[in-house]
Amino acid sequence: MAADADAALRLTSSLVAGCRHRDLMGLLPYALQLRAQALLLGGRSAEALRRATEGLKLAGDLGQAHRVGHLSGLVALIAAMSGDEERCRAHAQSSLAGCAGQDAAASAALATWALGLLELERGRGRAAAAMDHLERVVAGPAHHPVIAVYCAADLVDAAVQADLPGAAVEPLALLERWAEDTRRPWVRAVTLRCRALVAANGEAEALFTGALDLHGPSPATFQRARTELAYGQWLRRTRRRSDARAHLRAARAAFEQLGATPWAERAATELSAAGEASPGEPLPEALRGLTPQERHVVFLAARGSSNREIAAQLFLSPRTVGYHLYRAFPKLGIASRTELADLLRQGEPI
Image (cartoon, rainbow, N blue to C red; front, top):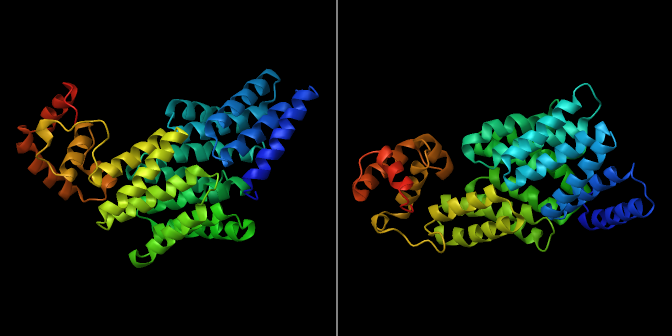
């Protein structure tokens, strides 16, 4: 609750070692759960997944149904961060099924948060679905006081993406109270990022830069990457593409290092929209006459996204997306989305 990653890592390491040394197998699943949570707080998601999976197996072998539910929710959350949708949904549903009829608020909150994060990382087109889950944790039937503060920033993000800024008021206030109580720089940084997301353009930049200053060498690398991504998106939308690219590159690199694949893809999408080609991928001859924005719209259209879905991802209007496709198709020598999809299937890198 104090958001102290260093202390959590130190104490849980000692706790797990003590359980193993004294052969306290009945307590070890709980110790592994706490260790996994500390590792996640410290930005070490791959190791967190290993410890959570070990604890889940042991809890199942020992018949600890309550612990199985909590660890299943934790595995679902880590899987959501990495974009492993199948694992996330399977473990979240298992956790929620196990919670039915039990006093297992923390387990239900973790599983519900995982499902919300899974929707959120897929962009604006899924923001409303993300909100449905996240609101249940922050102030709904899946509420848990500790987990609510950790997922409050995700609810702010989802509310902004869904163009429902009013829904960000309560979770932002919760974050601000938590930042005041904990006085942890990274919590204050996340709070500033969320304030920037709902601020007027004239106020947003100072909040973003203040957040990055506070992140500093914080172990919460995932949160710093989220701030870099949000700032880069804001810069691109305000037509400062050159400035945006530096922050989007930093976000993409951090997400790739963390194994947070969907977030890395979002950063790469934003980079492309800001005019940067993917490294190591030579631009096909047919695409060299397209503008960066036209190339990006064409790429998403070839993947099957509708004009409305493309518009949501790129912060454009569906009408503008249609205009870009109208201009791009003759340059590509095609006349329809079907031909565009055929071009992609034939191995033409777009």
